[in-house]
Amino acid sequence: MFNSGDTAWVLISAALVLFMTPGLAFFYGGMVRARHVLGMLMQNIFAMGIISVLWSAIGYSLAFGGNNSIIGDASHLFLSGLTDDGSIPTMAFVAFQMMFAVITPALITGATADRLRFGSYALFIAIWSVVVYAPVARWVWNADGWIYTMGSLDFAGGAAIHINAGVAALAVVMVIGPRKGHGVEPMPPHNLPFTVLGTGILWFGWIGFNAGSALAANGIAAQAVVNTHLAAAAGMLTWLLIERVKTGHATTLGAASGAVAGLVAVTPCAGFIGDASPLIIGAIAGALCYLSLGLKGRLKVDDSLDVIAVHLVGGLVGTVLLGFFADTSVNADGFDGMFFGGGGELLKDQIVAAVAVMAFSFTVTWLIAQAIQRTIGLRVSEGDELTGLDQSVHAESAYQA
Amino acid sequence: MKLITAVIKPFKLDDVKDALKGIGVAGMTVTEVRGFGRQGGHTETYRGAEYQIDFVPKVSLSVVVDDAIADQVVDTIVSAAATGKIGDGKVWVSPVDRLVRIRTGEEGAQAV
Image 1 (tube, rainbow over the protein chains, first blue to last red):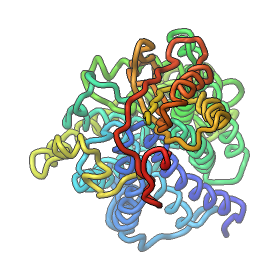
Image 2: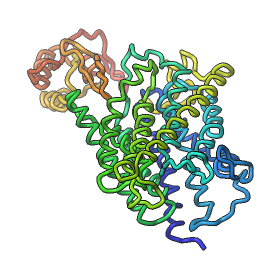
Image 3: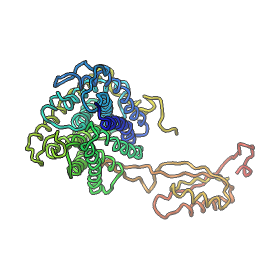
Image 4: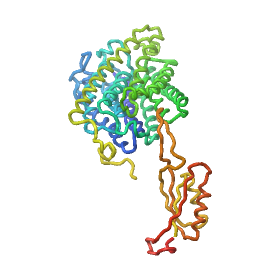
């Protein structure tokens, strides 16, 4: 017998998470130059098309079918053979998880902005979703997945989504190289109002992303709503504070970036922590993500919109800090972290999970990117890049002169 | 006839327009432009990285007038557009060889 409250909340959460992908499109779209904005919006919106089809056809079955600890099976191809055994219909879980599958590869587009061929991008995220995302989602969230059974915690996707997409972004930009003119000409954001609008949509949708992961309309979901919101708030404040001290100005882009950093970091923690923990985790994320902005320079990559600093670093911050801040008095299905009497066991499991996801995702993503690069090519021509993706790839203009 | 061209601070456009209407100037053409002079550009900071923005937004205004009032128009623009701070812009005057009102075919002073 289904619980109607639980079911309603998960279905609404699916819609909230869906809304995050267009939100991400505007978050990123505002940061690129005017001639590439449709290219960015298209890459994100297109993920809603292709990943949804692939997820229903094969992704869900690979992530949640069968009993293997590494990979699912073909028992639920095209969402066949689903059975119900919980308080919500399995189809509600499918819908909710489908939106996660959509947004995760879309996160990578911020790193590769302004230079991907559209067909190559489509091929890349299609393969990545099946070969990288589905297995990692299984490890982390399926009851038979090896990271799950090891005892690592990931409430809504710190490792499965943010570390995964963040390290994949690093692998792809290492293969494709920098934008033409990177480091020579300034490439300032063309429309920060879009970015702030996108931040609002992301923040709003993240409530469903994290609290929906309770898969029930209960106290843990309520705790996750508050944790999510507070971490975003704290992340914004520390980012702005450091920025104000270091550069003399508090910026709208800084407010947006800090909030997203806090949201990323609280994602794995949302349903396992309480009290002041979300404030501390959000604040640390805002600071560390800001201080990681220079990382791309040291790695000598053009991570155009800082996916590494925000998603990889933010995901690592949340995943590792959960080893300190997890509290079973908030959620009895979790474990206690070091600050709540749990010893170092959870921390060790969190680090193992983070390292495993990084190693797997980086390696496989690099191989996929190399394979596409060496066959059909990943990048548009230099002329097309200078003209802008909007005209050269899509034969459109965002802004009529 | 003279073509008077002014490059001014964008927020001064309304003051200049009102002042010119006040002395009987019947029309003008306005373009949003970017450029730099002694004011130079400015720096903007995005995610901790400083960007030098060389081209500053300005408004360019063109008006064709009779020789007789050309100096008055220039003086009016200068006083209405001035803030006293660097970057107020410039005004210059050029001769006009021929002027035609397209609707009627009128030429010269008739077409001003």
